[in-house]
Image (cartoon, rainbow, N blue to C red; front, side):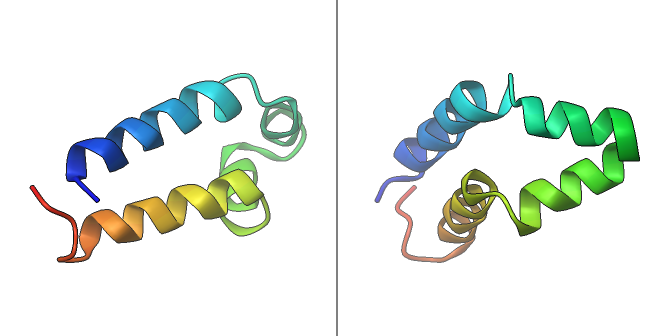
Length: 64
């Protein structure tokens, strides 16, 4: 997969799912930014998908 395609998919995912996420906003308001961010990284399926896309960017299999 090309690096450009992966970065476009990351951008699309962030803009589509994360920008207006009410769960993240509620956790940020109630518990703070760090808790909300850790929830997104640890428990959210979208966050897990973003992590896998980021890992694919770090691997050498991505073409420049």
